Length: 412
Ligand code: GLU
Image (cartoon, rainbow, N blue to C red; front, side):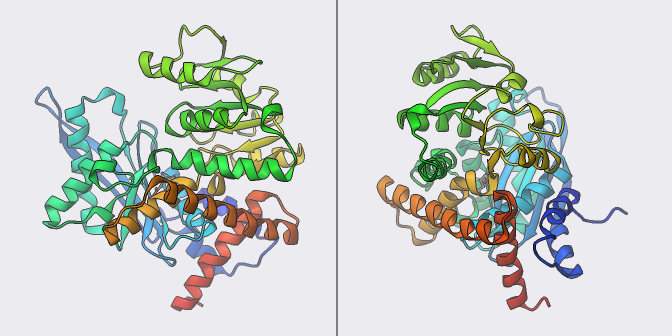
């Protein structure tokens, strides 16, 4: 039997072991998820047939609170990826000081190939598989790649039906009409934009002089393009999974977003075409990977020309690529800080659900900004004292917090 262990997490830990000592049981705590669920489950299709899907939910660490993290629907979802992402969620929640541990879930499926009806059946069936292990005080799922507020609504409804109870706090990222939080839809992007703004301020770099390339035009990529262009940054390139567009004078983001909304892709738009690979290698001020993981690898890291990378996606840079980027003096603002705005507003949603009292947009925005800025200040101290890059500094900060909580609970 293979061990319940996360291989990538070991790689991350190796990088920080030169700065902090970790005992064997601490390494085990940080590489072996507390619970790994893997299941096959039937879903009725529109043609009357039943299809069997594979699903996962990994609850990595709950020392700091109930586990928290999204569910992705993707044809390439796999257990090692989900484990790594669950580990990163535990770190992310520690970095922004919200009282959660880390989890992640997924289903191997291409949701674009399902009808709305089939998608609903799949979402509800997934919850029936994991309902015993989740709950507002145990594990709280949320949206991730290809999962939407509508899917969260079906999932919450299924859970409430099984439990015969009102339990909105079981899941976050719900629609506003169903006890979601204001701004949750753009929270990942807004949080990332706050982080970039602070970073650029410290470097005395002006928005209008900063060119940006964004890989991805989904929830994270599309919204960050909108926010940053409204703040005066020059977005010169953006892409979806099929292709990208480039205009060195700056794209009209409003036009691009409405084209994408109307046509479903960027094909035929009146701008120069670039491939996703070319987009990553453009000579821009800031590169924002906002799509899938493993985009910057040892094969293309040397070709990256941007000097700043804001990781809005989860795990877009492999540990091997990180070493190369470091050598080339590329500053990477890591995922667990850059995209933490999503889970921060998820936390706000969960708090509002438990109070049954809902905040206005301004209040959510102000609270998010405060948390993101405080997190930046906290880890900068680590960067200075360990003289390491931002990823290592954030990982040290988060891991120390998780281990402190474990110690207080009795793991010595
Ligand atoms: N899927 C998002 C993330 O990776 C949000 C998770 C959440 O809100 O729980 O951070």
